[in-house]
Figure 1 (cartoon, helix red, strand yellow):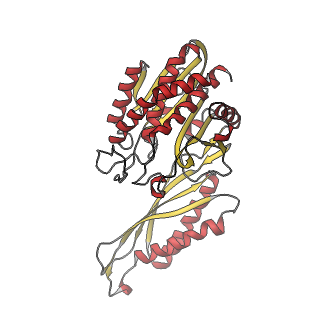
Figure 2 (cartoon, rainbow, N blue to C red; figure 1 turned 90 degrees about the vertical axis):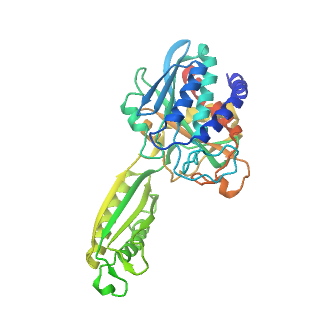
Length: 394
């Protein structure tokens, strides 16, 4: 089957590259992926794969039925873009102002359509079913959970889920895999400080929210270094401060936003509790008040141990052992693919697209992100191989 998958990947690569370029031109945000869903459905119709649409607003699940009964495997691609103005050098830039596929989800979507082309051609030789899941809102607020809530893991019941993400720091043609915890549990926070504004020449008559926020940010940094075990990875970053508009007015209100990342939800609990204690102490000392808003987002992404062992072998079969890298450490990025792992065995991996491009072009979520879609052949080969081996040989 490896040789058939390789030949079919080469056969359909040009079409997948065309789809990626088309998707890249029309980036959309969150759940409002109407143009994107239209492109996906049109291609599924062309291939001849039946599907259900409008799941979690714009999500799509297509099903390929094998020639013999058996298990069901789910392959997932996210479809959404980011609110970034594109500055890349590609010849098919975003036509949607202020929106860009700066995280490679256009490639994930096109690549999964390519997998559909391959597996649809091989379906008579397969035992079981393949669900191709095209998901909205991975970046925020998360589309995996509402799609699961709407029943995508049922009828037929899914036995395992696989997903992947392009990764610009990994050599093109390689994949990176990890057993257990791979990506972090993210939490966002917003703090609204309320003080007393006034003229900058008379600070003694004010409660300065800028001073309160500055002291808070500095003290927050001590939480990780002094309250969390060094054996438990965690990050607390303050990323946005907004207050006032003039050079001579002390603002009465200030907004502070940031993120927490960890691999253990109990560690995040500890960080949030400690943040609240810091806020109480500092605002009390300065005579200010605060509102602390916390949004606990996706779980940590953890690969199933048995599925990791199976996947490592399958990926080595299709790519060769030298092209499969086992990661020593997890990454602090996050992925709502983690929700699938809460219900069924799941496995996620990174696909390399690095071919010595400029440094800024190798960063996800960067306005200059640029990568060559010819490397989508790796997505196509690996997801197809995982599905075939899981259904026919596992």
